[in-house]
Image 1 (tube, rainbow, N blue to C red):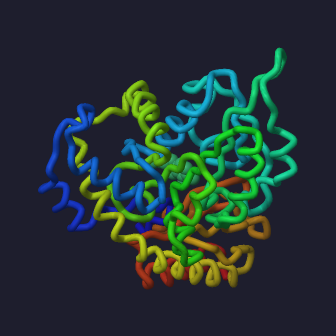
Image 2 (image 1 turned 90 degrees about the vertical axis):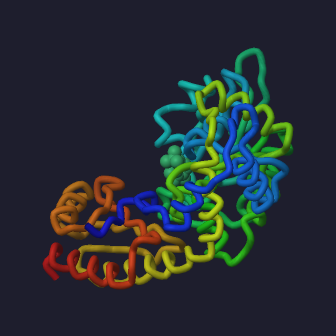
Length: 340
Ligand SMILES: *Cc1c(COP(=O)(O)O)cnc(C)c1O
């Protein structure tokens, strides 16, 4: 199968497997694991943040960030189609006891500043105060769109004027940095916390990192423990993540593959695919005889993995285990399916 379901379906490189085998380890709950400490320091440096915390998943990173920066009952401003709001099993309310306040973003997943300004408010006798504003980069459901540093700074300025912190879900921040040809830290100047994933695009088997001020990370360490995310000899999985950091420049290949895939598929009758900014291609099937789920099923039967993203939408994700030849093959197989 040519698997375009996600950029998480990758297999670790030989270097990652070797790094896992030879990693120096210790009990990380007791802060004895030098490999985890190195990963946290190195990634925080890349992100231009004071400190980092290794977490088992991006979801835990986002939830720990929200729990640490809010009080139960507060409101958290999220984008309507953001991962933290739609795809984390209601964690904001179930775990953090906070109330999500969704705001519809534009077609690139950007929050309108006037809507944020209107939604932010202090606590009163009747109303919970706003505890956090969340942003996402790249924006998954918008199709891997890049939130530019200016977009982030404008929203953060409104939040900070109201003493509200900002969290950036940067599961694919690596892709945003490569797309704009800038460093990851360019996107984090104005935010208080950021989460990045080693297992998306970069090919590591496990893990994400939450970064922020040293004081925030000390508090976040307790939130992580509360969620059961304190890990022991975690250097075994942190070592491949250190290797993954060396794979960031390679994402350019995935972006080029995604661009070629979108162009090839957009030429087929019934499929509309906008040229992607990063590694996510959304197929609009409105003009075809397929629904999103029916297309994903037919694709699977044709040996191509993709996922239904809506009634008439399918997502294809490029990643390190997809070759140039795979892209041509997918275009051929989808052409056969569509009958053009
Ligand atoms: C995948 C993803 C996450 C969560 O990461 P997991 O490691 O799967 O928990 C968070 N945010 C975005 C934008 C994602 O795409």
